[in-house]
Image (cartoon, rainbow, N blue to C red; front, side):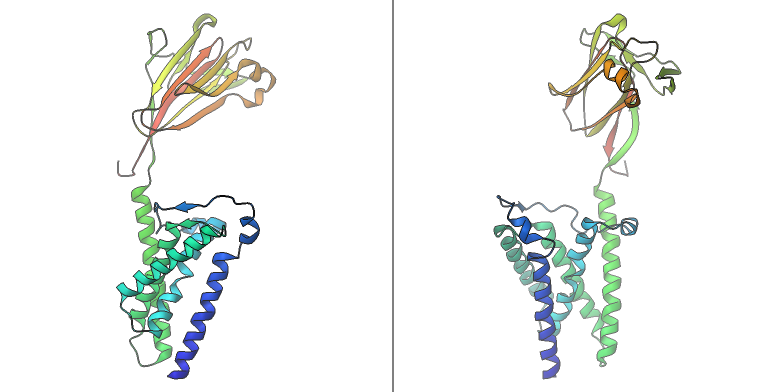
Amino acid sequence: MVKQRKILLTATIVYTIIVLYFMFFAFGRGEASEQISSYTFIFMPENFISLPSPADLLHPNLMSMVAFGNTIAFIPFGILIPWLYRVSFVRFIILFFIAILVLETIQALTFLGSFDINDALQNSIGAALGFGAYKLGFRYRSLGRNLVATAISGMVLFIALWGLGAAVDKLTTKVEGPFVAITEWTDNSGNSSTGDKPDSIQINGQKIPLRYNLYGAEGGDSRTFTYKSEGQTIFSFDYGCPEPTDYSGSISVTRDDREIMSNSGELQRTHPDLFPSLFKIPLEPGDELKITIKGDMKAWDVGYTRMQYFWN
């Protein structure tokens, strides 16, 4: 029994050293710290139990591996520590979480990483999974059966967490709703326009079908249309100079009186492969866009999609 305890203690110390190495020195942290001049502290948790989907694992990247590592790498602590010391779950997880917060703080202060509350929560969830696996698995007299039962319990709990994370991510993530076409717009002169709706237009010899609307300026004049977002939306339209044209037109977009896009018919003349072009921008509630169209330039299929939860 004493020998087994020594082996467990040695394994715990060695594993702790390995984890500390990855937390402070792996992934080029030492070199990167020389280029960091400010501390990074992230205190707001965000989808901290979300793990990469099975599709993401087919094309793994650094972010997906980190998300898995933050949880899986700390499961052994939930098994080894209660195996070494008789400790309740509440006491274990509180002390473990405090220890992780201290390590996260050291990472930030030494420029060897950042303080990220999401990492601390993911690490603690991993340890909690290990603790649960230990409690479920260590119910037999045989050490071998205990280890097998603990491994199976750990996998089952991890898969359950994976499913819970996917469900929470699904419930808390907004997606694009159906497209809503703007069928009536008021321009800078106060005139209301419902927009034209030909079946198609031709640009650079290419026939472009129109789905919803077509807006422009008449007789080479200038018209400015205003759109104000009433929620979290994604505003979009296509634009270009339809044939026949002398490429004299232009289009510009301002967001809260700051220009964010400007294009001209001359660009279409010199770079026809860029047209027709798509303009698309996410907007927050109250954001105001002003779209100014001049000359031959046209904008069509103007509208927005509202960001909403899947149950909406």
